[in-house]
Length: 561
Image 1 (cartoon, rainbow, N blue to C red):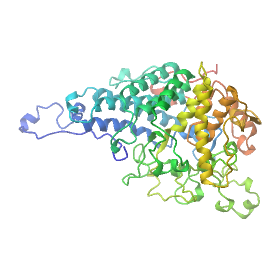
Image 2 (image 1 turned 180 degrees about the horizontal axis):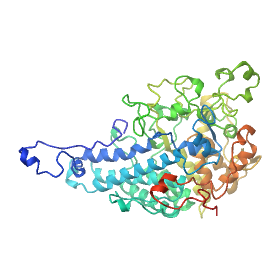
Image 3 (image 1 turned 30 degrees about the horizontal axis):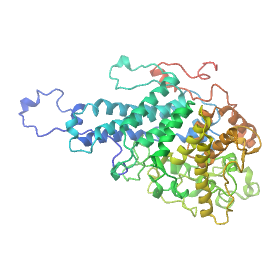
Image 4 (image 1 turned 90 degrees about the vertical axis):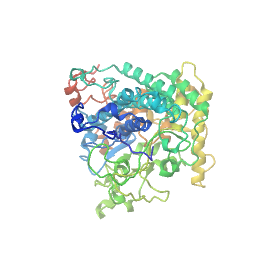
């Protein structure tokens, strides 16, 4: 997909008009192109599906709304950062449980998912009805595969909505009649059933892999299974999640990349560990501030680079002290996820140098000077790669990688009605052994005993909302705790943490413990987490104005149950 344009080219096939002027005026709506005239070639169908991927890349449309605002910043893994408390103040509200339904960041995120779903609906209405003869001579099974991609994407967009807002209106067709625009809000359970059905259809139609490099980055059967696994886990269906994990592992399609650092480089994209990545390119025609789709690159690089790094950098998504302390000694994954600059690198006054922990300037946010590294395009020697333009960073987003799948599989094996602790230990150890080998390769001084196999180590309990640490024992409870710890460090700063805590049912415990134990200058901004409210964000106010529907508990006067 990196060689393709990320938008739908609706092709106007006027042809050679062998008609007189009088005949021309007999046409219906002369001078216009009808939608049905745009789907006459296999490439038309490919372009339509390619367009449905595009909203996954969007991070800006009147405001910035990358999903890691929620996945990282609203959790205990990161602080908002930026130049001040008021820089992206709507995200300040989100991370500190002060969110209102008129939050424009959430509104733009909500609408972007529906644009993606709408584009998938266009595929079903037009590509599904194309004459099969059109595809004669094209790639075998192309029409079915393209419909599988559309099912995958529609399922993904609804999963992104459901994890943030709960149940939402399900629109599975193009709505053209005004009195049908207002659609009822589905329950959360029904929304997930729709997601399951979409991903099962995707599995049925998608290939295991693609033969052409032009198709790099498109959804595969493995990606659909992994996303279905994630959806099942989100609803506590461990048995079905495990079945999907069994199939992915048995396929032999994926493996763990030996070089953990290289995963987060342009050179490490779409490799053996990649299950699904959102594709970005640094093409030169885009420019800043023209709304969704104006750039094929990602903003995440400039948004997360530290402000002192030079050029256009904004310092958002600062890893927390608590995340930094979660890593075991010698674990190189901390260096891959978190950059800890020296005080000499941070511009400060002479007075600030005397009290570095009390610095309050645009380089240090509430005493925190860490920066997120995985998507900063920083080399091993900690220099920042130069960008052609701040809106055109080419590094892909790792939506699902095989380490994520293995840890989901381990979780499902432990929590299934018929637990299989041996398989869970195998999956956990696969991830830890890669980190062990990579840590030793990165730093020869790291001892061979680093990151020992389960249960021969201790884990901090702050990550599950309790004080202290626990020396692990060989039982199911501690194995689950080890998996929770491993997800936090393996997937650090990749936007997973909030959703993990939510599905584990411990958001309230973790976030209130975080509030009680973090730095006082941070804690003073955080409101208490209200169980039954803050697991979901409010349905955006403007969306409820356009389409009246019930609000989530705790917002706009709706009581918490």
